[in-house]
Length: 499
Image (cartoon, rainbow, N blue to C red; front, top):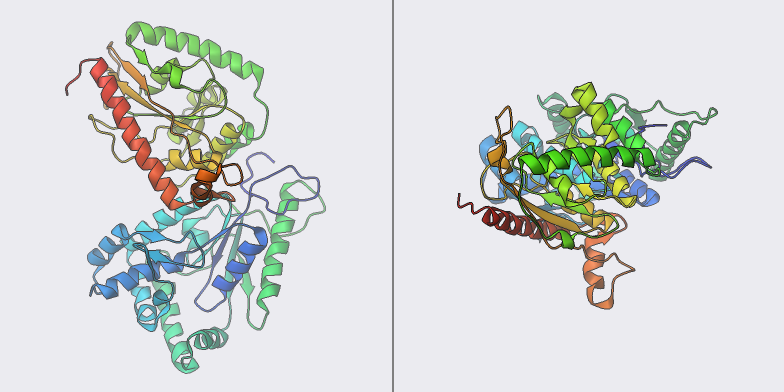
């Protein structure tokens, strides 16, 4: 079915290969979210994220620094700046310190609801959670606002609950505290969480309610696996499939449609001819209006997939980049273009696809990975939007993630002169000289199992079973920023620019 969001870890017999599922599990404390999420993730072979641990980590740091949970500005500052690493689901690292046990203490229990109720804190951590989801091929994500706020596009949304008495008994058993005191504290937190102004604890639209009272955890996990299996059968088009209704998706319809059009199919020769004709016109006119040198073309891979990562200073950049190769380039383009029907249709025909800026767009990432898997070069502007000036700043990690995940090189590109030709705010371009400098490709570590003895350890820590580590992501992004800046400086030097 075109554009279906379900990753389908348990596909129906005979169904085509599909992506892995995203499962959102919400519910009150003590309902069994962590245990169910851990067993379900293990059963499906996908990653797991405990978002509650993030709020607890912020709370712990605030308490350690003597910051009151009632001080929104100070607590938000902590949420913005601390380094959180939850890639190992069994450990929580804050600024490289293992706080797995410390965040579960009674002091954090008493203060975490107040911290989680701060809108700016939730905004900061939701952004981090969405970025984490975008870096993983399927996951089980647990918390209190996952299905409604963090991942409303989840394939299966679950609200896991249990009686207050049983939840208190579970927590008391974990901490050896009195069940009466735990139950009183739990009722207070339920009240705070369900009545807060931002992202209150509630059943998300389209979620199924699962009561774990008196049930073995294995039975709950088996129910969820069965629901995912039946959902996969439904989406494979089996008429005899039964199960929950397809969860809704918040992705724009055009994003889902384009993803369905380009994913997993051979390149249409007619599309290649159309692209070649359009490129001939665009590059020909561009060379007349914007002449200038092209340096380093020999550094481009002659075949196979790679990511072109140009600096972004003008709306002309896309047409200038088209000069570097005759191969069809795939472009990640802001989704607003598709609001104009004619432009959107043209973008489709040229092989571009939309990305929602400022959000973790799983559809765009999946389509990009599909294009790379098909052997095509991909253009991604790492700065995300047009910038101004001579410094490469605010580079996002999407390019590095795609390169590490797909195992392809990133090629930095410096463009000079395009900002003078059409700066931000200009309605029409004007003639100008431009320069293009192509840098040395940044090649990701070899994948585990294919690396040589010397770099096997690095490979295994950077990419493991579809997982991209934060350290590898950070290192690759930093290398890309440096290379882009070097290319940009050289391109500006080609034009004799000193500004």
